[in-house]
Amino acid sequence: MITLTLNNGVTLPTIGLGVFQSPPEETTDAVAEALRVGYRHIDTAAAYRNEREVGEGIRRSDVPRNDIFIETKVWVSDFGYDKTLHAFEKATGKLGVDTLDLLILHQPAPTRFDTTIAAYRALETLYADGRVRAIGVSNFMPHHLDRLLAETEVVPAVNQVELHPYFTQPDVQQEDAAHGILTQAWSPIGGITFYPGWGDGKRSVMDDPTIGAIAAAHAKTPAQVMLRWGIQQGRSVIPKSVNPARIAQNFDVFDFELTADELTRIDALDTGVRGGPDPDQPRDAFFDVVIDEA
Ligand SMILES: NC(=O)c1ccc[n+]([C@@H]2O[C@H](COP(=O)([O-])OP(=O)(O)OC[C@H]3O[C@@H](n4cnc5c(N)ncnc54)[C@H](OP(=O)(O)O)[C@@H]3O)[C@@H](O)[C@H]2O)c1
View 1 (cartoon, rainbow, N blue to C red):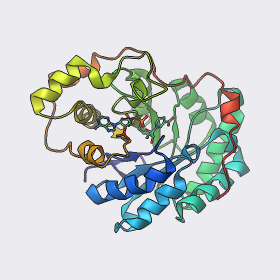
View 2: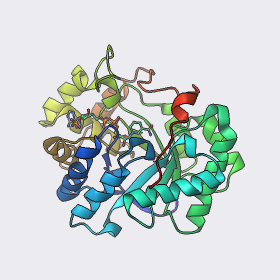
View 3: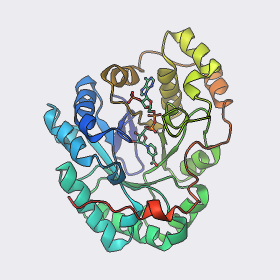
View 4: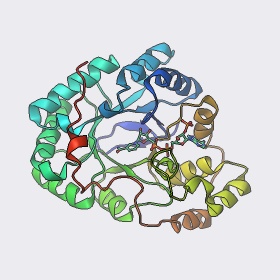
């Protein structure tokens, strides 16, 4: 298992299983299957409404809890010092664990940044108390990070952002690196460019001819090439699948290497256009979605 070392010395497996849009009834099986084939990192979120099933999948596997890196996210409606402390209790209650390996803010709330800061201060308390082994953020752009770094003490260990060949966010990657923050790629195989309801009318990176040609040259799939590109550039990748064959395929990326030229050709595919929501756009109705108690 290849790992990355976070800025506080904690190690994180390079590949994790994502579970956004994994239906609760399929999540337990997907998590248990991923652990069976060798994954040791699961990325969930309160807002995915499947933390319970992630916990069930972990318990169903033979892998000891301490060998698994569990990452989850606090949703915006739970931002605020006391509310975020309580969000930790909700998450651990649903997952059925005492501690978390990584707890991150799901995204900045541009119109309520004070509550974003208060939420992060709660993460700092949980970290100081040993309830979480590392803390971080998601969907933070450089100006969000600047403000967070100015107003809080603990530098985030991770910034999880949209990152696939069509949207590589070099400014975010540079800012993260400058502060020792690990960039973690969501939609690392470009899910946001093709999954139903989100990808409509967009070009799917999965069908990109450059990626297809590189995949053919290595007798690998486009998904494997995109994961390898992320890993070789030092990112954490968290591909989602509920399909056993694809779960295994996405983990089978340690037996080939992309050349410097291939990495450059993939970098050149960046369109600068994000597939997902702009973190600076307020989405108050969505932000206010209530997260259930444990
Ligand atoms: N922080 C955030 O705001 C945020 C936003 C989005 C995602 N995330 C996290 O990042 C994880 C990954 O991102 P994502 O789910 O958006 O996209 P992704 O992992 O890039 O792509 C997932 C899609 O690809 C399909 N797929 C999986 N493996 C495949 C393969 N080998 N070949 C072809 N298709 C394949 C999946 O379907 P099947 O399940 O049918 O295989 C699913 O439709 C999420 O699950 C979540 O944990 C975070």
